[in-house]
Length: 457
Ligand code: ARG
Image (cartoon, rainbow, N blue to C red; front, side, top):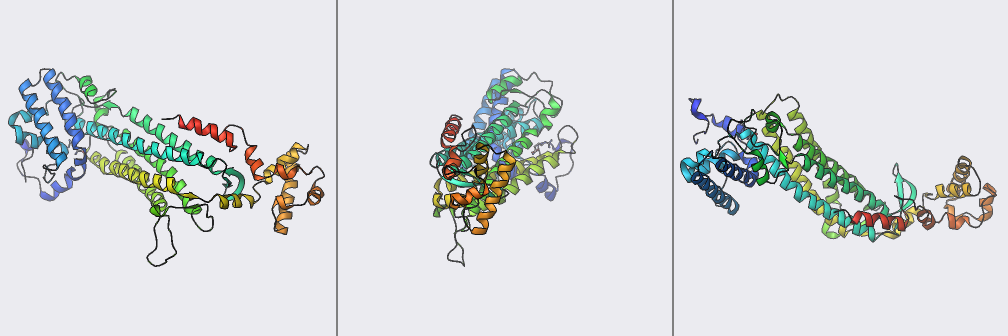
């Protein structure tokens, strides 16, 4: 086993099982670029402040740049017994440039270093996830624009309730995704502080320029308390919360896609590229992408819970328990990224069976509320109108017909207020077209909603 960088007070080597248990290199190696970037800014600052000589800083910067290049190209691999990515890079640097490498860690602890690296890493990943979310958002807007007059039943309790349009239904998801994006932006804004300079927990006696480092690394500012700077993981928890909510939205949508693509609904047909077959049943076309998204939502909830539980009992400041933050937040990131791409493809390519949607809206008495509203228009109080409409629904159920099939004299036997204009008043088109107040399904209202949605970037 290689010599530990902290073994001055030790008289024995670490047990190899203990070493394996302790190491985070197999998973924190994915932060190598952020670790090197952070070290470069730190070294520049040490030189600027006169803490290390210019020649040493130069050696450190050249060495780190080389290491970054070699890891990027695959020449340098992580097969090492180093304790973590921070030790790995520092050991490699010292191997390459000698004693100057040993000066890099002046005025720094792995505690503030790791807190910095995770923030940098999460900021980078959040940017990628934001753009994936925005492309799903654009897909939904395009799909909605194509379906402004596609009538479908809206549901409550999964029972047909009132006629809406597919565009209106999609607009609901557009709003959810927009909130997911703004929640992501909020979380990133709150994590946008550099903890470097917090040291192990109590700051440092070196005259570090914390703001210089923060600025070099693209942070909006610096953390305000050294204990908090090294022991805060709220930002990872908050981001996981954002991801959990976002996955919940994708999961609800997935559930609908699964229902809609069943033969019982037949509202959509998934493109062959986004469906799978069965190894035994030749007729099957399964919505695996939607089902996996619904399933993987559980993983992301689990990641959020892992982080909350890891942190709940920890005294200030750093504790090794906190090394457990990484696999959870990394898994949440991988799962969200993994879901967004195929989910977007599935939605953009799915074929809408508007005829079946409209047929479903014509059954199920989705215009019963509008019949009651029609009677209100003729002077009947709403409660009485509700009762007349309900009795007519019962009449239709017994006769196996829909409200639009009721003859005028039959209508009038329930209420003499009903006249010929009822048929137009309760047609599905009228039901949708008359719902014009903001947030409602009338085509022009939805057009304005979509124009407003398109302005969000
Ligand atoms: N690998 C550690 C982690 O991820 C880095 C910080 C180690 N600090 C320490 N004092 N052992 O949390």
